[in-house]
Image (cartoon, rainbow, N blue to C red; front, side, top):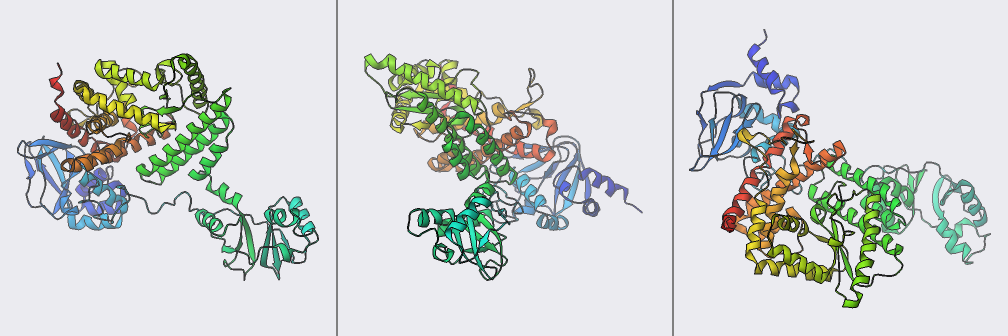
Length: 639
């Protein structure tokens, strides 16, 4: 006879992670061991510092508040389907917070001893539990929690070890082998290569490879006159043949060619010259197999002579980004690679634009990326945010120099548009005379922002102070950066306005941890991950890094990591902010690729319970970091 209650429990659990990762039979077996607990409102389930229970809990009905400290502040709110009390499963120590029912509640108590084998045997279950447990700390992958089930992870992220990296797939090779004997003449070999349209001929004896002749051999040894065209293959072939087994990965093939400085590899049955050849692999084959390999894409970009030739490469960069995300490559590494590729594309656009100009630049200049691109966080193709700064020139050359760089910037902005970057709606581009200035003009403009602290000036400072050099003279940029830091130091009131501006970002959640959605407009009922989650962290990082007068670090996670070095007392919070920002950036990027947009506005109905939990777990740091800067700088002092 079926246990009706346990089946009802199983039917409930199967809809929520980590139980979604289990098969139905396992859930039913587990449900038979679960206790059902009823708690009235304001009942303590476990107290702070209490010894751990033999179970963890799932909320079936109602809500449970997790509280900590003398003020009993609510750190988190667990509602239907949420799990809590995981400490006895992950860490052998007392509870670090209190769990108290916020309203009348029904809980499922799941025995640790019964559930532990599932966590150890099923990586999806284990990974989810680590995240859920750690989300009640500042850093979901802090050293004290990381690796409790599976050992150390890479760069703070859980990797799927079952997936294959992009460049370790088996390489594709040609099975149509063109062969000759050792007595075949060079002339005959050249004719064979031309007829068969191949770049190499394998020299065989008794069906075994004894040498190889490539088009390079013919150029170097025959065309140069070193040997006559009647020379036999045995005298001009490369021998012995370098052979490998046919199950060669793309990376292995590339490394083999680089190691031996060769352009062709012979593949045999067992990988030695003692068995029959099964294929020939050329450097071209490797390049094709690599496809979206960053090195290949960079070479392709640098070969481009026209803007339109870069656009399909940009599409390949987006495919590479999708591949990295699919394979859970750490977002820190992904950001660096994609940013480097984006920068190369922009640099090549500038190179092409310079060739369109009738004369070389009349002065040194620097092309600046601003906003998210300046922070190396623009993974998706959004609109342009850029500026141009050139060295100061004599009075009589000012007008001519300005005209030149405006014309150059117009070419560049047009080129960027052609490869996929939309024009900035606010015209914050170098082709706008406002953003194409000499070094002295930029200093005067920045000084105006710093000494006239209106809302617009603070907003422009937020965007511009995240600039980075994409192309041109680094000395000009350093000069400008030094001036900005000195001017801010001389005008501390401006800094308070920056702090005040950083605290204006709207909160990501409201009462009961509910996501705060847009109330009107085209994105009504969507969650704005940029304004409500990413901006509060990037604004805080900017304010704090400027307070330490640190220049040349514009990336938000890297700013937090530098702050962790500078302020050891706040290291845990800063590293948590760094992790949270990367997690949010990864989430936004995935959503943008999924919906072919900027990823800024998210339909919560399309998210799974697990995705919502992961998203919410990153929000804890926002409140704390804003409290830090509010207390430290006290923007209420602004008159």
